[in-house]
Amino acid sequence: MKKTLLIVFAVLAGCIGYACPPAVIANGIWRGVLQRNDGIGIPFNFMVTDSAGKKLIYIINASNRLKVDDIYREGDSIIIRLPFFDSEFRVVNINNSELRGRWIEHVGNRDNVIPFVAVHNENYRFIIRDKIFSSNISGRWSVNFRDSVTGKSYPGVGVFEQKGNHVTGSFLTGSGDYRFLEGVIDGDSLKLSGFDGGYAQCFLAKINNSNTITAGRLFSGAGSATKVWTASRDDNANLNQKPGNELINSDTSPKIEFTFKEANGNKISFKDKKFKNKIVIIQIMGSWCPNCLDETVFVNQLYKEYKSKGVEVLGLAYERTADFTRSAIAVRNFIQRLAIPYPVLIAPVAVSDPLRVEKTFPQLKKIIAFPTTVFVGRDGTIKDIHTGFNGPGTGEDYEKQKEVFYSIINRLLEEK
Image 1: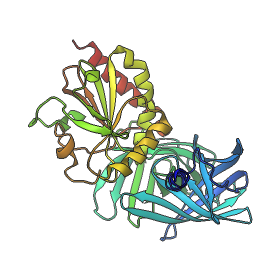
Image 2 (image 1 turned 45 degrees about the vertical axis):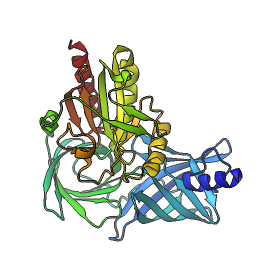
Image 3 (image 1 turned 180 degrees about the vertical axis):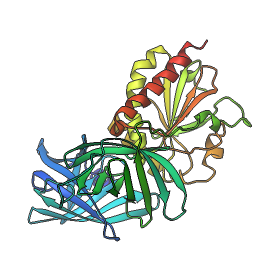
Image 4 (image 1 turned 30 degrees about the vertical axis):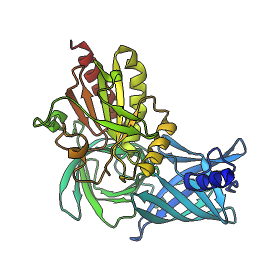
């Protein structure tokens, strides 16, 4: 019976630490493409290598390398489970030079599925048909995004670095950034893409000159909806976000009061002695959220620096389902992968629940972005709120983001 349970667990949760059949994939560089129904491909590169008798894959996006170590064979298929965001590849190996199959993203009670193909020894992202370019887009850009379905517009900031035909960078929005993007300038065309298991996206646009980019389109995941965008060069481009304190609900008790479970079922209350008379950072997040991953890596560092000074951190995860057992599996993986040293609680509602705030965190009017970071003073009341997070893919903006957090914490520590 014990052996049967172990096998079932291995199938459900991957084969880390369990002897699943090894996968056969040729070492070296690969070019993968997610093939959307509209004909747009989302390309990315990955490197396959051996380590301790098993395969490792490193997904490449600009300077970022995402390590994938849960790779095994299931019948004729190779299963490649991404370390975050509950997604996986199921592929077959054709002559050890081509992988064909599907990328499956598990979203609550449904799956998003995109056909996938990868070719060995193809060390490029986009084909460059015209190497001659008249403009260099390195720098900062003011961006306007418009949803092609709703017609609603929202601002963004583009940050790019161009070397020859090669381009890296990202886009910042009010809810965070699009993480590490990489691509090319092909004549007057800009082509960027990124894939990390949570984000699968392709940005295409026309470069009119050194100061304007038009006809931009954003293709994301499997969905048919497309965002359009334009950009103008602006060295001072900024999002001019409103203070997060406007999200504080003055109609409720000013003190934080909640009790939720950790992934292991243990209940933790904000009233626990651990948090009394402490500065507490409440990280509103989700294991499905790429920007939350970037923030968590930084908050881990922050906690190590400030714990001895009287600062505690508490994660509150809003998952894609209200099923605690399923949510616990995703959150537990997130905690283990990132070696999170502070408690992460699971909200008893799905992130899609329109009453998620009223049911769990009534001291807030609403949650407008994931992550949202709530800074609580020693008296147990909210002192500051920060929405979204600009991660390391944004370069200088990431450094400024960290400075904001340090500034808030140091100010709260000085308060008596």
